[in-house]
Figure 1 (cartoon, rainbow, N blue to C red):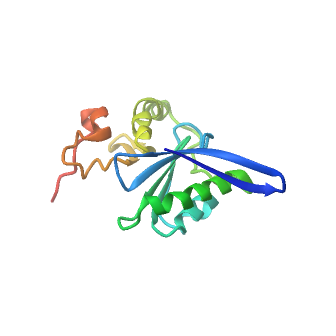
Figure 2 (cartoon, rainbow, N blue to C red; figure 1 turned 60 degrees about the vertical axis):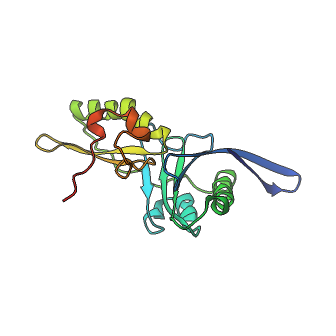
Figure 3 (tube, rainbow, N blue to C red; figure 1 turned 180 degrees about the horizontal axis):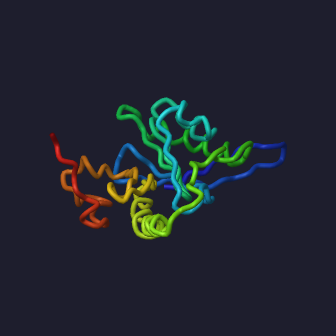
Amino acid sequence: MLGKIAIRIKPHAIRHLFIRSLPTPNPSCWKFLPGKTLLPPNTSIEYNSVKDASSSLLARNLLLIEGICKVFYGPDFISITKTQDAEWDELKPEVLHAITDFFVTKTQPLVLTLPKEEKDEIEIVRKIKELIGERVSPLLHEDGGGIEYRGFDLNKGVMIAITIGCLLYTSPSPRDSCASRMPSSACKKKKKK
């Protein structure tokens, strides 16, 4: 599906922004592609509340829409998750308007401050980030999700946060949807206590 909205800026001047909107395997999550680079490669940011979104006017405006519960920025897309009782037919026009309005007026950067990067990364951390960026991120981005590097510890291993639009842990099988394209070690379900 393709969303298109025209907003009048000045008399006799109309700007158009074409935003592709795609469903993800998770029916509560849609992926919106404004055709612009949003964040540096291998970077993602997630907002779960208006309070969390203090560094992003767009995320705050999207979370103020009744029925939206999560906004996730990837390098070139925005994934938006709705509450269970909300309907996409009602939400999509508001979401498309908020995204278009933000990019057409461009009153501030998408994100005022990006998460801090460690200044002196050791070689192993650089390689881990490179592998995540080249092998894992593209698979998750296809379904409107992403991965965030959280750290590395010689005793604990790699620490990451994964956001997936394919409900990996609630699928009938861990190999459903995007999980079928991920390495088997990444598809293991959490054990129930």
